[in-house]
Image (cartoon, rainbow, N blue to C red; front, side, top):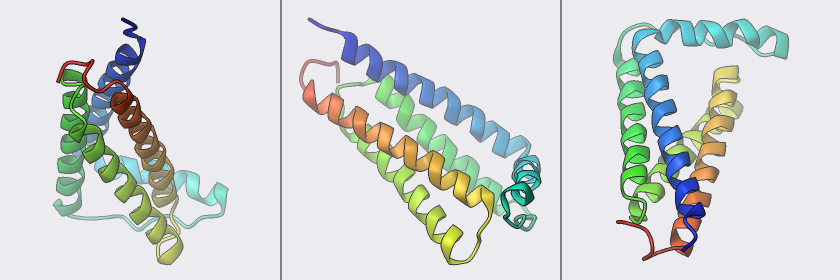
Length: 143
């Protein structure tokens, strides 16, 4: 039995879980610095800096979202035969990407919106690819 697709699926799932957890921690402990980073790059790309966000409401939502996507990627790693987890993760990432594109072109042409649209769009497409890989090997992987 060729375990290469399963190893690839599990490696990608674990890598995403680790990266999502790290980003969630950055959002939790350094939320202002994330925006400062993107705002420093914005003028060199001809974009306006995003306004600084105050309060805790948006960091709470960002950290909760990162927790959820970390959990889904971790469940993909632990239960590679279950197709529900990659579908949910892909939906979340693609929705985030589309909303970021809407805000970038509709009302907030900020680098942070564009960067999120590209990153989450790529991740959403990757996870959809993993979903189709999982479907191709359905029944052969541990659920």
